[in-house]
Image (cartoon, rainbow, N blue to C red; front, top):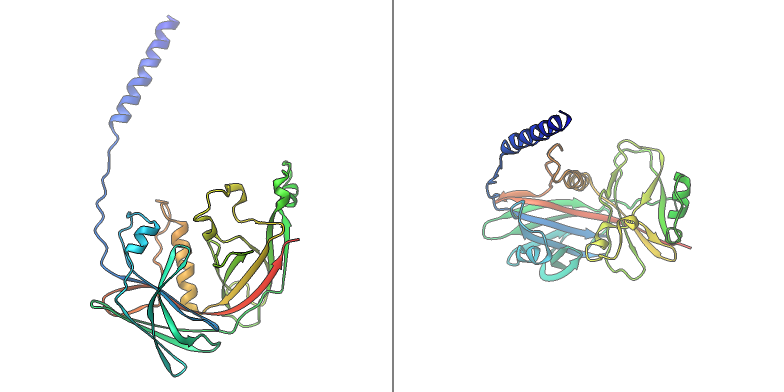
Length: 308
């Protein structure tokens, strides 16, 4: 009798499994092609020439790799930058910043604190414009580090490895001023790296911390891992003892902060069906056609820190 009961239960389980598996429905989503738009990433920093990345947009599920991005470049645009009573006609010039290929550069206008700069982009089908300002730089008060071994011991129940003693987390202290409206982006690079990189959330506002002193963690920028398969997940965001770390604090205006903040939110929720859809803000105004992205000025403050 027990054998028959077991066989009955087993057969019943298989039958139920077949019923539910037979109820599966494959949903084939056919998303409409996006409307054509130009994607702008324009940058003017203190004491630096203008850099602009100008590309076409692409469907959401298209591959994202360097070859694809290069194929989306727009190289026949007229790009003008006006500021300080001068006009700069940008010239085609390829400069890589990790996955961002800047394909236009200025020739003589350099960013100045307090300067207002207007960009105009014209192609056969598009006419775009935007304006930004370079705000006075904001500084950090102090910088220090802690090894991963110290953090592991503090957490308890774990024993740090020898490698943990060679990894370090950098902290910095920010003292906010009395007025609301300070906004920054934080960048870093280490040793002989020539390109700046940023964390997943790189833009900060004093909206909720006005007038306060706050300690932050400075993670090693995410972009440095794009072409580096040797770094493990356990080491992500850490620097190493002996590193010389260069830190850049860039003051940004409100439209630029809104762009980077909404971009971070959209990136964090990517692929999550329960996430609230985020529309990425832009300060690009379209007189003809459609434009996306950001034109921004950076008021830069630099610090160097050696992890000893």
